[in-house]
Length: 167
Image 1 (cartoon, rainbow, N blue to C red):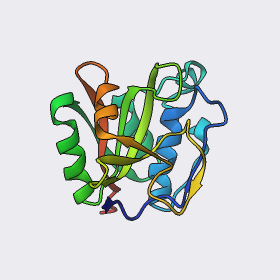
Image 2: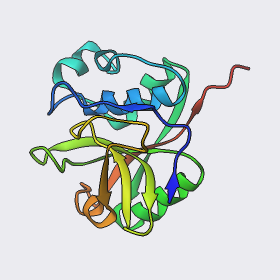
Image 3: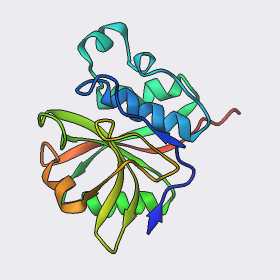
Image 4: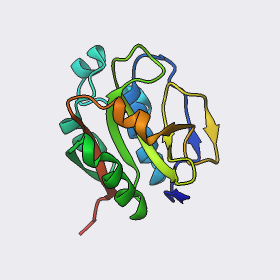
């Protein structure tokens, strides 16, 4: 079993089931570093909030407001599992876009906080799932299911999270 540490103590369920998935994932990332913000504060602008837009390449800038750095990547579906496992082994979570599993199949942000090799399941945080505390995520999804839900022959990923250096 591979799990990311540190990780948030609490994985929250979105109050608006079909909205705010990106900000909930950013909040989990901030919580990892002992920081917090409300989901409505974790949009690039007020216009993005009104439209519930969590644009991948704008998300690192949102995290920088709170002293956390991250990088946006595009990972092809064929290398997704291998790349996620490499990040987990470096003690890094992975935030990514997929077609929702629990919702209506529209684009949805989730994150991966661990992997269970005995079942080939990723330990994920899905803001459409149940609340959970003290665990590496709130749901388990098979690697094949996640890969089948990736849009665009791959997906946008937010990775390499760290505190900003102060020098």
